Length: 398
Image (cartoon, rainbow, N blue to C red; front, top):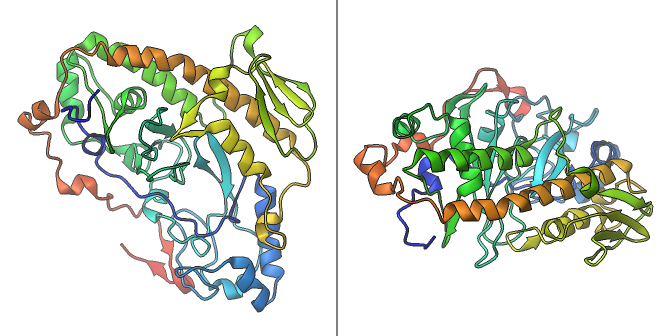
């Protein structure tokens, strides 16, 4: 697909978007919740001068910055200089492509936490995350998530976070008004917000710095793409309790030699189709899983580096597991499986893009009155179904 195509922009199909979170410091996020609780405990035990250094203050967050609770989270609202008590309960977030970690959901620790995202985060919500623009990098241009994403790309200009729903409990799809009805009429059956989400996950393409979504005029092509998209979206956004993905018996990766307690290097033996982690060994690992890149960065290398890169001594980030946890090995096996299965879908997605035929163009949507989207659709909905405590215990009003 060429950059001058008239395929609709993703920014028009899902008009409300939010910038990536800006953490400001690395220690409030970790691959395991126990480390976060240990870091918080060390922080609140420290005296005032020690806290200043441990916080790693920024222009927007210091020991004396006032900040409200994040929507739906119970945290203190007094300045961090006076913070006490147990750690706010960590929550699962998408820290990077295929890398779910844990975050202390305390707005006093985060430079830009994007409260509008937290206000609509629940078990019904899903997110599309645009990946950073890197010319000729290849790989997926959007990724789906069931947990709130940080939104930062591994490289390149960061994209945007697009929730599927504008309100909690799956209410008010974040879709251009009238689009689902229009597509339902064209394809002869109901098209839901989840259907459009799945199609975008499979078929979105990069057109220069833009992300565009070709829409077929043929109901049969739509059905084929929808099947691919549902599979891709399920692999990317599985929620807790969902069935785990599996490769066929002879292709499932296993730990062939135990991983060391403190691994420092991740290598790949292409001839043996094996991940080498120190003296540890996992196989079979398909070459396509090892070669899976997002924004020009190899997913498995980045995932490993975020768990093993040295932390500066004396910082809160240095409080981490003393040995490689078994849970990380299980996560690694699952990521290898997911990347291998997604890699198998990629040639099918590419083939379908070449067989789209006539398309529902941006011009067709303009003639139908769907584009341009109303300005209100690009702004967050007014959502306040519970009181939100502001700085110093005052309640916030929207």
